[in-house]
Length: 204
Image 1 (cartoon, helix red, strand yellow):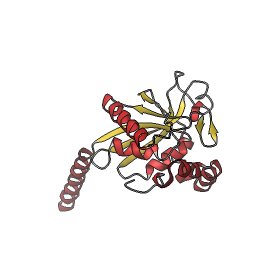
Image 2 (cartoon, rainbow, N blue to C red; image 1 turned 90 degrees about the vertical axis):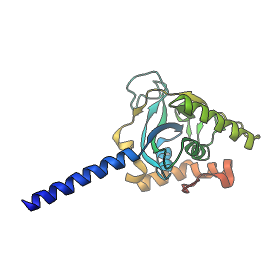
Image 3 (cartoon, helix red, strand yellow; image 1 turned 30 degrees about the horizontal axis):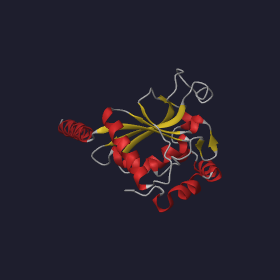
Image 4 (cartoon, helix red, strand yellow; image 1 turned 45 degrees about the horizontal axis):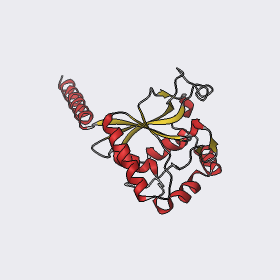
């Protein structure tokens, strides 16, 4: 009997602590398109405060896109990022985004060409629109020689991609590293941003 009481006590405490932990997390979402979603997902997985990343398709008009149809349906590759506002901010995520892509390229990203691989910010609220616009204005002022072409768009329905795309960098590290290196993503980001280029450094 005593063991049952102790077991119930432990379970109750565990449930209570789990509930408190969940309440302590104030979660919001951000959606960024930055070329290959494997790479965007991998970059944001390294950012402190990011709770979850999902690769997917958005920005088009055709319903239920798949990897074989999303281009025809007008979607772009994007990543939905869930983050804890107590540990990071939308402004900080924007800073990571700008410096992990080439926002001056209107034709795609790195070796991946076409609108499907273009950069875009899909603001999820009016507040995010304002923050994104301020961030873009600041970026232009700091880099007047760079023509920042990344659009700030309203939220569009986000369709998660197939399961084999999720967490690709973690599940297929050799293939991922080969693709990223061959595509020249890091080299070109460094060429655009120099020392400001994002390299997965916490607090960037």
